[in-house]
Length: 215
Image (cartoon, rainbow, N blue to C red):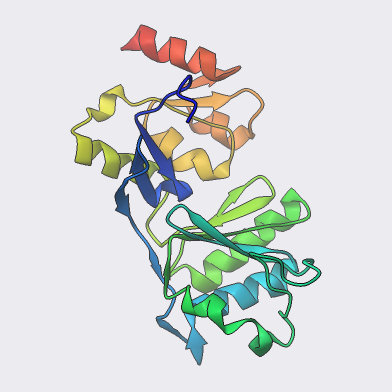
């Protein structure tokens, strides 16, 4: 692997997964997709509702593995399934892999639609998951998990002083960590990110310089 740009750890999936530099899992907070939801399971209900609201793909993350269900694959492809209607024809193996999973995500046609769909998913499934908007994408980790919480769990695990943590972000799913830890909003980001941050920066280099000067 190219180590020119090394890292000490990775926090992924909106904080639901932490890995060390060698790819070993430090912690993971999965969603129990096999739990009952109405007359079906949570995983089936979520995938169906995402399809109804967006008509677009649904990505499912299992640790560092991703599975895609996409309506536009001509024959399903390696990671996609087309038989979303009727829903019962969806390849059965998909849901056997969704007993537990780390996160769902999807994409909408524009940011206005994304805001509406995010609110709908939060209202309908908020007892189980925490949908968060990221541009035209929606990230859906387990309830109670966000980037701020993920950083808190990693800091506690590694004994990191939270006062020494600086965060950089540009969109709505970054708000929890920007509020919680010396937030550095990107100048090109959404206004909400700037409103909750201590600093506004042009790029990551400026964030690093700022963090080094302050600590």
